[in-house]
Amino acid sequence: MNIHEYQAKALLRQYGAPVSDGRVVMRAEEAKTAAGEMDGPLWVVKAQIHAGGRGKGKFKEADAGEKGGVRLTKSVEEAAEEAKRMLGRTLVTHQTGPAGKQVNRIYIEDGSGIEREMYLALLVDRQTSRISFVCSTEGGMDIEEVAAHTPEKILSFSVDPATGYQSFHGRRVAFSLGLTGKQVKECVSLMGLLYKAFTEKDMEMLEINPLIVTDEGSLKVLDAKVGFDGNAVYRHADIAALRDETEEDPKELAASKYDLNYIALDGQIGCMVNGAGLAMATMDIIKLYGSEPANFLDVGGSATREKVTEAFKIITSDPNVKGILVNIFGGIMRCDIIAEGVVAAVKEVGLQVPLVVRLEGTNVEKGKEIINASGLNVIAADNLSDAAEKIVKAVKG
Image (cartoon, rainbow, N blue to C red; front, side):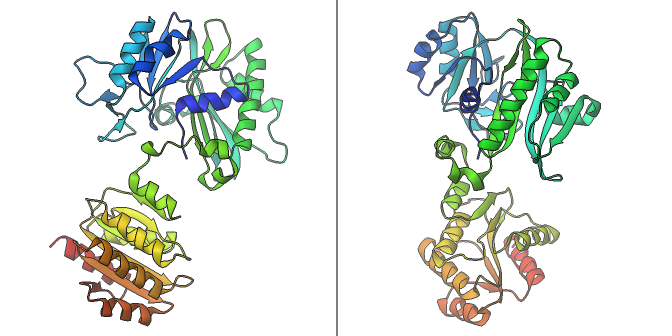
């Protein structure tokens, strides 16, 4: 689960991190009042979407020479005007894709004098199963670009959970970033509180890009991007309340409400499979036969008829889907439950595209009987290879 920059900064402020004063604006008429509550003389106006690269992004149908989603202004009136210009428009960045994302929230904050920009992140290192610090002197840039061209400028190390964060971790970051004097002490303190926030709130990623040295020589969190472990959000009602459903794919949002593992993709063949490994294999074999999957969808091993029905409805709601492949290997999941769900869904939403069903395992004969007796125009498959070949052929005409 991701949150907006202004929410991330408010959370870090609770832990004592140095962040700028700011106000969130959701309606254009609120912009001037919000900006007027800050001292200036600089006001930074930032579009709030769940994507990076906002400063370099472009609005659809933008005026010639118009700036991106992060703008520096020098008066309350100018800040309010820029906020009004951005609200309701679609911002396209390298992370949103060509469709972009609509800006429904604006963050106006006090400007900061910048002496240096640096990069800092905390994340879960899957290789070591530990929390890792990643830092670089090249702040304000995409870390992928730094890693590709100047990897020697990146320091990465993990923290032993048996000891937790220690002062020497902070000093290691400080010396790597070239900090001196009081900045070293500030860095040790800041790294400690960030580590505490990361662990207490079950974050999976905390990125500060840039972390700056101000013109007064102090450290400040100038931007913040935070993602949480979705499996742990139930433990944090305050974090769950920050969820912005308008930033999520409607199909993925609907799937989450029924505990379905769904990820939208760009292909033509919708997939409904039980088990993540089998789902990946199904997607691979669709590509092998010359087409592309439209989604990853794992209904799980304990899906009910209702969940299967909802899964089928989510697949058919995607206008890009030109064919559907149901691939079930029944172990804990029974084939008759899948069959009942598919039949119920088709009767409710209709079937406008080819449907190939491959069933194997527990109650497979009963499942096939249910589908055969339904009168549905279903293409039966004997195995995974046969199923993939048939659905690709059906979609390609």
